[in-house]
Image 1 (tube, rainbow, N blue to C red):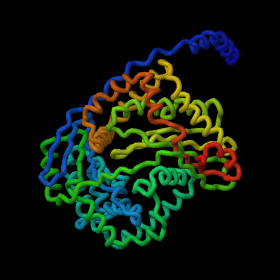
Image 2: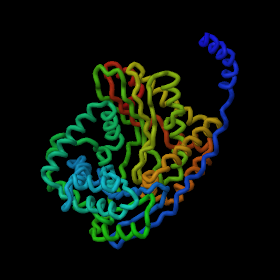
Image 3: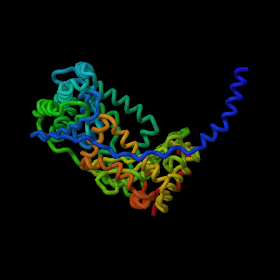
Length: 459
């Protein structure tokens, strides 16, 4: 009887509940500007720069030592040598073993890491604020005094060989590597995975030579964010890094991306999905068009409610998680759309991707759609920066591209000021489907005929 009465009561409430569900949600609030606390900077005589930003109230401090080297300084026979060098930094210094480094960081309530990218090797981590100066001394030791023991070199080469094999067994990494090769040619940015024989040939002497040529104070920016005493941190940085030799300036060597359709298919027999990468070169972050490009990317494929996502995910069910993004490096930027699509609709997926780009080239987006995208982009920007490491990441971005802190302070306002006409003109200026590079990994016998309309036409 209780259940019967409860059911009857619920039935009487359904119409009211349904009416409540049909009510429009309250309008979103206006996104606020990102407010970066004042940055304090110190320049050491050896060329090293220090940036400090006091942020938050939790008694922790984040430290990042950005060293201006990476794949950009690798030769054709040195692929991933910078990555191996970064791996080895944590294996021991001239006075500490690898376990000693980890233990010291843990005793300070934190951890330390080292990672290599195309243009920077980042060494750092977080610790409790009371240990800020000691943690900086530890990070400085790791960056400046690696031991590069033979046993560590051999072990980490084996680890990389295994990790590379696992990565290259996936269609996503195969497509990413092929796309980079197609659009960037023989530039260091395009060389991602070395042949196993090349990797095995790296000796301790080779690692030491790479370190000696590319590590030095002139290439280093130290970032500290969190709760700390700026004067004490500055003293610690001078003491820990002041004796580092200046070395050579960092390398700036932008590629010359392909400007016409490049096309390739990697056969993956029996694959039920095709991995598709599509993109081309666009303006880099120093351009006045960079903010409009951010909005255009978000509207096309960079947000969950974007046009390409709605089209090939929601409406047609071709894929689960397509997305686009702007890949930026010094004086270089690419717009890229990536999707794993059902094999039978590989060609139709490309048709829809190019079709959405063409639609934005011919007609400006409606105001309501554009406002929603801009609010989403502005809100995500503020949320991403709501942490110690988030602040450092943004400072590294503006420093790497020479943008200045005003870029961060004005980002939300500038995003919100982008007009529908600017989006259309930006698409017309940069996103020409006929010039886009296409890399596909899939079952060739099924997809070749579908892809024929998108292959470059020979004269």
